[in-house]
Image (cartoon, rainbow, N blue to C red; front, side):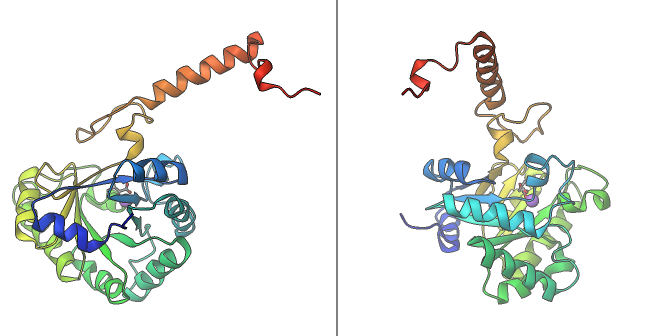
Length: 266
Ligand code: KIV
Ligand code: NA
């Protein structure tokens, strides 16, 4: 199988086609999602929430990212493996951003990195691109800046549409191969997709972006509770797992498990 590369994503946009992206943080889901045809596996710093149980992405370290990204890279044959630079690993200087991105590439075997960066961090992004590492810029709602942004708020509405466009354009000018738009007005996102040469990828950004991304535990219903409006659930894995584990617990209590076929003799 041929690996998905940045050139294929650009071709998709130029041909008016779409591509799909889904998070993954381990070797088994990476294999399943890869064989199902997902084009980009995102080892997102959302693993702070979905794997480690924190209530934000701020505690996530480079160590976490490289360890889990390496597992995903080992499970994916076709998909591009894209890894987030975590909070605190790129803001100080372009040199720090390069150092962190290089470490991720070396230790994980991933193919590209994603950086939450508005126009004011464009020089940091450009330095990583100059190091030969493909970068996806992430603008709009950027969870690492949750406290500066005043919580989970839709970005790019009304007059803020221009700022979103400026930030996205700064990412393209810095050399990004794509720009991710999180939780923004669908109208503002459509304007960005139109204005840029490179593809945009949306999460809660309407239907005009070239790519779409979701967090897998939301999409497959492994996480329960209130979901953001932009999540479509394709399965209810939490329910399935809960029923299966309850059956196991009952079987152990009743002695129905293990049966003869699960036992060694002699
Ligand atoms: O960390 C993540 O999963 C992300 C997506 C929500 C885009 O950055
Ligand atoms: Na992220």
